[in-house]
Image (cartoon, rainbow, N blue to C red):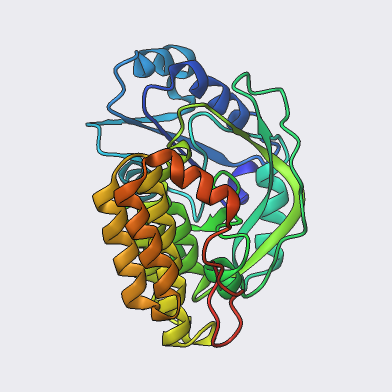
Length: 327
Protein backbone atom coordinates (compact mmCIF):
# COMPACT_ATOMS: atom_id res chain seq x y z
CA UNK A 1 0.00 0.00 0.00
CA UNK A 2 1.43 3.45 -0.89
CA UNK A 3 2.40 5.52 2.13
CA UNK A 4 -0.26 8.14 1.42
CA UNK A 5 -3.01 5.51 1.74
CA UNK A 6 -2.16 4.96 5.40
CA UNK A 7 -3.90 7.43 7.77
CA UNK A 8 -1.53 10.18 8.81
CA UNK A 9 -0.33 10.17 12.44
CA UNK A 10 0.88 13.48 13.85
CA UNK A 11 3.51 13.13 16.59
CA UNK A 12 3.64 16.31 18.68
CA UNK A 13 6.83 16.97 20.66
CA UNK A 14 6.74 20.00 23.00
CA UNK A 15 10.22 21.10 24.03
CA UNK A 16 11.68 23.67 26.40
CA UNK A 17 15.48 23.80 26.76
CA UNK A 18 15.84 20.08 26.03
CA UNK A 19 18.44 20.35 23.29
CA UNK A 20 20.46 17.52 24.84
CA UNK A 21 17.50 15.10 24.66
CA UNK A 22 15.07 16.20 21.95
CA UNK A 23 17.15 14.87 19.06
CA UNK A 24 16.86 11.38 20.55
CA UNK A 25 13.10 11.83 20.74
CA UNK A 26 12.88 12.99 17.12
CA UNK A 27 15.12 10.14 15.95
CA UNK A 28 12.84 7.63 17.68
CA UNK A 29 9.84 9.12 15.88
CA UNK A 30 11.56 9.12 12.50
CA UNK A 31 12.37 5.41 12.83
CA UNK A 32 8.76 4.29 13.36
CA UNK A 33 7.80 1.27 11.28
CA UNK A 34 4.41 2.85 10.61
CA UNK A 35 4.94 4.50 7.21
CA UNK A 36 2.93 7.73 7.43
CA UNK A 37 3.89 10.02 10.32
CA UNK A 38 4.58 13.72 10.59
CA UNK A 39 6.72 15.05 13.44
CA UNK A 40 5.87 18.45 14.89
CA UNK A 41 8.26 19.99 17.42
CA UNK A 42 6.76 22.91 19.34
CA UNK A 43 9.64 24.89 20.82
CA UNK A 44 8.24 26.62 23.90
CA UNK A 45 10.69 29.52 23.96
CA UNK A 46 13.93 27.55 24.40
CA UNK A 47 17.12 29.54 25.01
CA UNK A 48 19.60 26.67 24.59
CA UNK A 49 19.86 26.61 20.80
CA UNK A 50 17.22 23.92 20.31
CA UNK A 51 15.82 25.53 17.16
CA UNK A 52 19.14 25.90 15.39
CA UNK A 53 20.11 22.31 16.18
CA UNK A 54 16.80 20.90 14.93
CA UNK A 55 16.87 22.89 11.70
CA UNK A 56 20.44 21.87 10.96
CA UNK A 57 19.93 18.21 11.84
CA UNK A 58 16.51 17.55 10.29
CA UNK A 59 15.64 20.29 7.81
CA UNK A 60 12.21 19.67 6.30
CA UNK A 61 11.93 16.13 7.73
CA UNK A 62 10.12 17.68 10.70
CA UNK A 63 7.81 20.65 11.21
CA UNK A 64 9.25 23.16 13.65
CA UNK A 65 7.08 25.70 15.47
CA UNK A 66 8.61 28.28 17.80
CA UNK A 67 6.58 30.26 20.33
CA UNK A 68 7.16 32.36 23.44
CA UNK A 69 7.42 30.35 26.63
CA UNK A 70 3.80 29.60 27.62
CA UNK A 71 4.00 26.21 29.26
CA UNK A 72 3.65 22.56 28.34
CA UNK A 73 -0.16 22.35 27.93
CA UNK A 74 -0.16 25.37 25.61
CA UNK A 75 2.62 23.84 23.51
CA UNK A 76 0.69 20.60 23.22
CA UNK A 77 -2.44 22.47 22.15
CA UNK A 78 -0.50 24.45 19.55
CA UNK A 79 0.81 21.18 18.14
CA UNK A 80 -2.69 19.71 18.12
CA UNK A 81 -4.05 22.64 16.14
CA UNK A 82 -1.16 22.49 13.66
CA UNK A 83 -1.45 18.72 13.14
CA UNK A 84 -2.65 17.46 9.76
CA UNK A 85 -3.28 13.87 10.82
CA UNK A 86 -6.52 12.28 11.97
CA UNK A 87 -4.53 10.60 14.74
CA UNK A 88 -2.24 12.27 17.26
CA UNK A 89 0.52 11.11 19.57
CA UNK A 90 2.13 13.30 22.24
CA UNK A 91 5.75 12.61 23.15
CA UNK A 92 7.71 14.88 25.47
CA UNK A 93 11.17 16.01 24.42
CA UNK A 94 12.97 13.71 26.86
CA UNK A 95 11.02 10.54 26.02
CA UNK A 96 11.31 8.07 23.15
CA UNK A 97 9.03 5.80 21.13
CA UNK A 98 10.14 2.28 20.32
CA UNK A 99 10.04 1.49 16.58
CA UNK A 100 6.77 -0.49 16.63
CA UNK A 101 4.90 1.95 18.89
CA UNK A 102 2.73 3.77 16.35
CA UNK A 103 2.12 0.69 14.20
CA UNK A 104 0.93 -1.44 17.13
CA UNK A 105 -1.45 1.26 18.33
CA UNK A 106 -2.77 2.03 14.85
CA UNK A 107 -3.58 -1.64 14.32
CA UNK A 108 -5.90 -1.45 17.32
CA UNK A 109 -7.50 1.87 16.33
CA UNK A 110 -8.12 0.83 12.73
CA UNK A 111 -9.58 -2.52 13.77
CA UNK A 112 -11.77 -0.98 16.50
CA UNK A 113 -13.60 2.16 15.35
CA UNK A 114 -15.32 2.41 18.75
CA UNK A 115 -11.93 2.94 20.48
CA UNK A 116 -10.69 6.53 20.75
CA UNK A 117 -7.43 6.16 22.68
CA UNK A 118 -4.87 3.34 22.77
CA UNK A 119 -2.19 3.32 25.45
CA UNK A 120 0.65 1.02 26.45
CA UNK A 121 3.21 0.46 29.14
CA UNK A 122 6.52 2.31 28.98
CA UNK A 123 10.04 1.57 30.13
CA UNK A 124 11.30 3.93 32.82
CA UNK A 125 14.92 4.80 32.11
CA UNK A 126 17.70 6.79 33.71
CA UNK A 127 18.83 10.17 32.34
CA UNK A 128 21.06 8.38 29.82
CA UNK A 129 17.90 7.15 28.07
CA UNK A 130 19.06 3.52 28.08
CA UNK A 131 19.43 2.19 31.63
CA UNK A 132 16.08 0.66 32.55
CA UNK A 133 14.63 1.28 36.02
CA UNK A 134 12.73 -1.92 36.90
CA UNK A 135 9.07 -1.31 37.72
CA UNK A 136 6.02 -3.59 37.86
CA UNK A 137 4.06 -3.77 34.61
CA UNK A 138 0.53 -4.88 35.62
CA UNK A 139 -2.36 -5.46 33.26
CA UNK A 140 -4.27 -2.20 32.91
CA UNK A 141 -7.92 -1.65 31.96
CA UNK A 142 -9.54 -1.29 28.55
CA UNK A 143 -13.04 -0.23 27.55
CA UNK A 144 -14.84 2.14 29.91
CA UNK A 145 -11.96 3.20 32.17
CA UNK A 146 -13.45 6.43 33.52
CA UNK A 147 -14.22 5.35 37.10
CA UNK A 148 -10.93 3.52 37.50
CA UNK A 149 -9.02 6.51 36.12
CA UNK A 150 -10.92 8.94 38.33
CA UNK A 151 -10.88 7.17 41.67
CA UNK A 152 -9.06 3.86 41.38
CA UNK A 153 -6.11 2.99 43.62
CA UNK A 154 -3.53 3.63 40.88
CA UNK A 155 -4.53 7.23 40.20
CA UNK A 156 -3.48 8.28 36.70
CA UNK A 157 -2.26 4.95 35.38
CA UNK A 158 -1.82 6.08 31.75
CA UNK A 159 1.81 7.02 31.02
CA UNK A 160 1.71 10.42 29.32
CA UNK A 161 4.08 9.35 26.52
CA UNK A 162 2.02 6.36 25.35
CA UNK A 163 -1.50 7.32 24.16
CA UNK A 164 -2.33 7.42 20.45
CA UNK A 165 -5.64 9.25 20.04
CA UNK A 166 -8.18 10.20 17.42
CA UNK A 167 -7.41 13.89 16.97
CA UNK A 168 -11.03 15.00 16.56
CA UNK A 169 -11.85 13.63 20.00
CA UNK A 170 -9.10 15.79 21.50
CA UNK A 171 -10.44 18.84 19.70
CA UNK A 172 -14.01 18.07 20.77
CA UNK A 173 -12.85 17.75 24.38
CA UNK A 174 -11.18 21.17 24.26
CA UNK A 175 -7.58 19.99 24.35
CA UNK A 176 -5.35 20.35 27.38
CA UNK A 177 -6.40 22.72 30.17
CA UNK A 178 -3.81 25.49 29.91
CA UNK A 179 -4.17 26.65 33.53
CA UNK A 180 -3.10 23.25 34.93
CA UNK A 181 0.65 23.20 34.48
CA UNK A 182 1.08 19.68 35.89
CA UNK A 183 -1.32 16.72 35.65
CA UNK A 184 -3.07 18.28 32.64
CA UNK A 185 -2.63 14.97 30.83
CA UNK A 186 -4.72 13.22 33.53
CA UNK A 187 -7.39 15.89 33.13
CA UNK A 188 -7.62 15.31 29.36
CA UNK A 189 -7.63 11.53 29.72
CA UNK A 190 -10.57 11.88 32.14
CA UNK A 191 -12.55 14.10 29.77
CA UNK A 192 -11.96 11.61 26.95
CA UNK A 193 -12.70 8.56 29.14
CA UNK A 194 -15.99 10.08 30.26
CA UNK A 195 -17.32 9.71 26.72
CA UNK A 196 -15.08 7.25 24.85
CA UNK A 197 -13.63 3.76 25.06
CA UNK A 198 -9.91 3.16 25.59
CA UNK A 199 -7.74 0.14 24.72
CA UNK A 200 -4.60 -1.08 26.46
CA UNK A 201 -1.71 -2.96 24.85
CA UNK A 202 0.24 -4.90 27.45
CA UNK A 203 3.67 -4.07 26.06
CA UNK A 204 6.29 -1.44 26.91
CA UNK A 205 6.48 0.53 23.65
CA UNK A 206 7.91 3.86 24.84
CA UNK A 207 10.69 5.06 27.13
CA UNK A 208 10.03 7.58 29.89
CA UNK A 209 13.19 9.33 31.04
CA UNK A 210 13.28 9.92 34.80
CA UNK A 211 15.06 13.22 35.47
CA UNK A 212 15.92 14.58 38.94
CA UNK A 213 14.30 17.98 38.44
CA UNK A 214 11.17 17.01 36.51
CA UNK A 215 7.79 18.51 37.41
CA UNK A 216 6.64 15.39 39.23
CA UNK A 217 9.41 15.87 41.82
CA UNK A 218 7.71 19.03 43.19
CA UNK A 219 5.18 17.69 45.74
CA UNK A 220 3.30 20.96 46.19
CA UNK A 221 2.95 21.65 42.48
CA UNK A 222 1.77 18.12 41.77
CA UNK A 223 -0.64 18.05 44.73
CA UNK A 224 -2.16 21.40 43.73
CA UNK A 225 -2.60 20.22 40.14
CA UNK A 226 -4.14 16.88 41.10
CA UNK A 227 -6.59 18.64 43.40
CA UNK A 228 -7.65 20.88 40.51
CA UNK A 229 -8.15 17.86 38.28
CA UNK A 230 -10.45 16.26 40.86
CA UNK A 231 -12.36 19.52 41.35
CA UNK A 232 -12.91 19.85 37.59
CA UNK A 233 -13.90 16.21 37.13
CA UNK A 234 -16.84 16.54 39.54
CA UNK A 235 -18.89 17.91 36.64
CA UNK A 236 -17.67 15.60 33.89
CA UNK A 237 -20.32 13.46 32.17
CA UNK A 238 -20.87 10.13 33.87
CA UNK A 239 -19.27 10.98 37.20
CA UNK A 240 -22.46 9.84 38.92
CA UNK A 241 -21.94 6.29 37.67
CA UNK A 242 -18.73 6.15 39.70
CA UNK A 243 -19.80 7.72 42.99
CA UNK A 244 -22.46 9.92 44.55
CA UNK A 245 -21.91 13.52 45.71
CA UNK A 246 -21.03 12.59 49.30
CA UNK A 247 -18.41 10.10 48.15
CA UNK A 248 -16.99 12.68 45.77
CA UNK A 249 -16.70 15.11 48.68
CA UNK A 250 -14.57 12.52 50.46
CA UNK A 251 -12.46 12.04 47.34
CA UNK A 252 -11.79 15.78 47.10
CA UNK A 253 -11.17 15.98 50.86
CA UNK A 254 -8.43 13.37 50.51
CA UNK A 255 -6.76 15.54 47.86
CA UNK A 256 -6.91 18.57 50.18
CA UNK A 257 -5.37 16.39 52.88
CA UNK A 258 -2.50 15.33 50.63
CA UNK A 259 -1.93 18.94 49.62
CA UNK A 260 -1.86 19.97 53.29
CA UNK A 261 0.83 17.38 53.99
CA UNK A 262 2.84 18.64 51.00
CA UNK A 263 2.58 22.23 52.25
CA UNK A 264 3.66 21.16 55.71
CA UNK A 265 6.59 19.14 54.37
CA UNK A 266 7.83 22.23 52.52
CA UNK A 267 7.41 24.57 55.50
CA UNK A 268 4.22 26.33 54.30
CA UNK A 269 2.38 25.88 57.60
CA UNK A 270 -0.37 28.48 57.07
CA UNK A 271 -1.32 26.98 53.73
CA UNK A 272 -1.23 23.53 55.32
CA UNK A 273 -3.80 24.57 57.93
CA UNK A 274 -6.02 26.10 55.25
CA UNK A 275 -5.92 22.85 53.26
CA UNK A 276 -6.73 20.76 56.35
CA UNK A 277 -9.73 23.03 57.04
CA UNK A 278 -10.93 22.60 53.44
CA UNK A 279 -10.74 18.83 53.88
CA UNK A 280 -12.75 19.06 57.13
CA UNK A 281 -15.51 21.07 55.42
CA UNK A 282 -15.87 18.41 52.73
CA UNK A 283 -15.51 15.38 55.02
CA UNK A 284 -16.49 16.03 58.67
CA UNK A 285 -16.15 12.32 59.48
CA UNK A 286 -12.37 12.76 59.77
CA UNK A 287 -12.47 16.20 61.38
CA UNK A 288 -10.79 15.16 64.64
CA UNK A 289 -7.58 13.81 63.10
CA UNK A 290 -7.35 16.67 60.64
CA UNK A 291 -7.82 19.27 63.38
CA UNK A 292 -5.02 17.54 65.26
CA UNK A 293 -2.78 17.73 62.20
CA UNK A 294 -3.62 21.42 61.74
CA UNK A 295 -2.74 22.07 65.38
CA UNK A 296 0.53 20.16 65.02
CA UNK A 297 1.56 22.41 62.12
CA UNK A 298 1.64 25.31 64.59
CA UNK A 299 3.88 23.50 67.05
CA UNK A 300 6.19 21.39 64.91
CA UNK A 301 8.36 22.00 61.82
CA UNK A 302 8.19 20.39 58.43
CA UNK A 303 10.20 17.30 59.42
CA UNK A 304 7.31 16.32 61.70
CA UNK A 305 5.10 15.89 58.63
CA UNK A 306 7.58 13.38 57.25
CA UNK A 307 7.50 11.47 60.54
CA UNK A 308 3.70 11.46 60.63
CA UNK A 309 3.62 10.32 57.04
CA UNK A 310 5.81 7.33 57.91
CA UNK A 311 3.75 6.44 60.99
CA UNK A 312 0.36 6.79 59.34
CA UNK A 313 -0.83 6.47 55.77
CA UNK A 314 -3.19 9.39 56.40
CA UNK A 315 -6.87 9.34 55.58
CA UNK A 316 -7.60 6.42 53.26
CA UNK A 317 -10.45 6.54 50.80
CA UNK A 318 -12.22 3.62 49.21
CA UNK A 319 -11.89 2.49 45.64
CA UNK A 320 -14.39 4.05 43.32
CA UNK A 321 -17.42 1.78 43.56
CA UNK A 322 -20.84 3.36 43.45
CA UNK A 323 -21.17 5.64 46.48
CA UNK A 324 -17.48 5.42 47.39
CA UNK A 325 -14.42 7.56 46.87
CA UNK A 326 -10.84 6.76 45.95
CA UNK A 327 -7.80 8.09 47.76
